[in-house]
Length: 175
Image 1 (tube, rainbow, N blue to C red):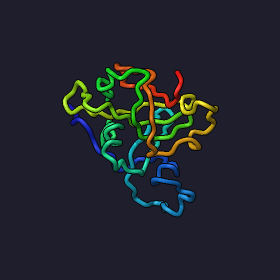
Image 2 (image 1 turned 60 degrees about the vertical axis):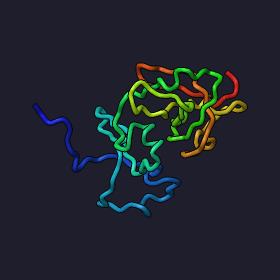
Image 3 (image 1 turned 30 degrees about the horizontal axis):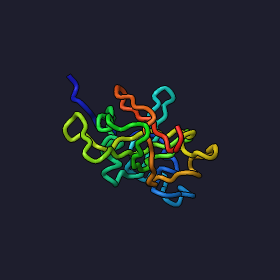
Image 4 (image 1 turned 135 degrees about the vertical axis):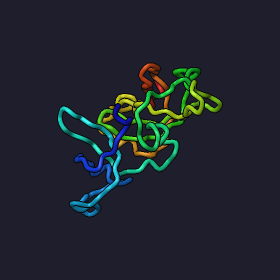
């Protein structure tokens, strides 16, 4: 049997300029040089298209690293049981992790004292705030004009999918 795991010494992928460092990078050529060795995390892989999306930005804050699957970024189904007693009217604290064209990924902290099924299960998980769930008063055209990575936000849970570990969130004050 083959050993479980392996090592990649060379692969080709895209590091978008928004993934070079925290904040805004106007000119990637000022930060990177052709042939330069860099440390990256894999954000997504599309084998059919032969594409890989990479990030050079570190997960420095432990609560954010736990929310996205650990410092190594391993994939696992999130344990949503700490949120079992949270109702749709309950507001929770969150931190914006990633901005997407269709919304934002937010790390959500469970209420104090909440515990998951698994021992040591994180009391912080990630959820999606769809673009239509960001503002009460106007239609949001561009998520980047409304939210910033690292911004503290208040959210409510719209839907929990325990089997897939997905959580849908809203920032709207109305239902």
